Image 1 (spheres, one colour):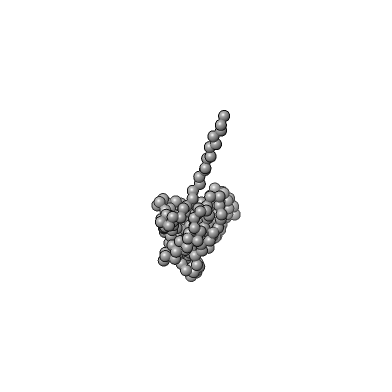
Image 2 (tube, one colour):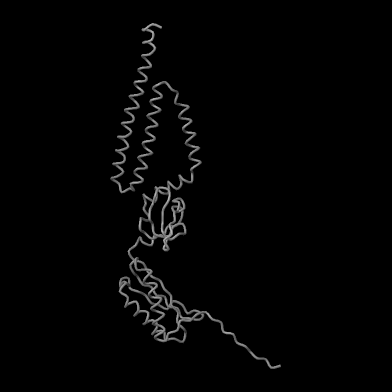
Length: 268
């Protein structure tokens, strides 16, 4: 083969290879520039950094895949089969990891909508605890007895979420019963005095003490007091103890379920 024939054959391939390299280099540079631009734009929005990084990673992978296909196409490679193969592989992977994708989608919604944040005391998926971390696939909690629990985000977003820390104040609802023979007014005044003496009980909204029910064996008072959310359990437990001790001091009984059995003697 003479030189002229070799050059005539090699020149087109040289041009194709050069163009493919140019496409790859420029495409790689443009991919990095686009990804950085998108991440900077997302950082201006109050999004979780983890979500921003994840979007950047996915976008980079997609753009690089487009660059590779464009470079191969420039070399004369039939990319139709490659695209079909990638599509089939993507479908297979999607079906295999559908639960993970559901958790991921739920994680994105939790991060965007923020129904709770780190440090909140919540009840999610039937579990109560303090939120330690919210990731794209799961949420980590620790319970009152310091157990670590990891809940898939799909179970959280598809269920009821109760956030006990979302509001600054909470209402403590309590019920106390007295005997029918006890002094009703004295019991009510005692409960009101105990609420007034506790500095953690807020004046607005005002606490409520009311006769709620004339039950089978007791007259039941409903006691409602507004407190700071952080004081909820302390006030509830303290009030139960103070009411019992104060009622005992004032001779006010707290009935408990009992059964009276009457025996009749038959003469025979």
